[in-house]
Length: 163
Image (cartoon, rainbow, N blue to C red; front, side, top):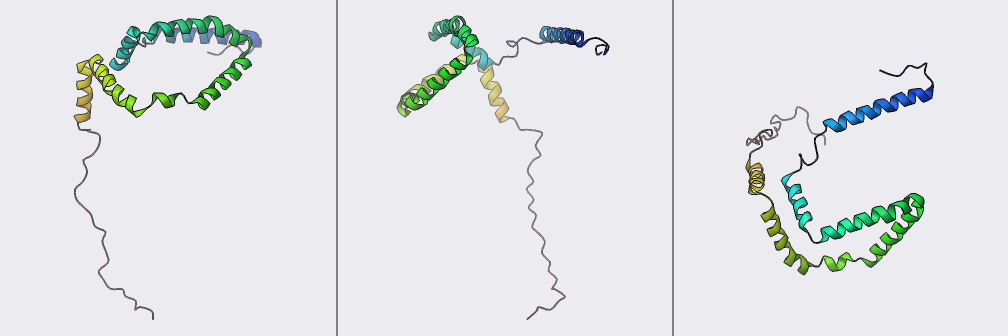
């Protein structure tokens, strides 16, 4: 179903664009929603973030980026990239993650994070993961226990050794 080659190029382009638009619209209407396929861990993470105190700060920062930085980025994209380069260089030079990743901090924080994760994720999910680890995989053949030794020739050589 291609456009008639006798049409001018501009009309063929318009017909092609219309077909693409209709195809994309049809795919978007038949595609399942992302939230339908979300895993329990992802849903738990979304719920946790919705109740987190920094959620409001993230929303405000997102609005600020959309209203302030987006128009600047459209007018001066090279300046925005240069600024990001300078900011990235400063971050690498300052290495602020050194103070965050102290072993003592992780030792105190890790049990709390694991406890919250275990409390948020439903029990059925943990049981399903445990069952998947304990199930035998049927697609892998069982390892053979018979050992095969390479056969060696036991007959003497017909040729006499060279001296």
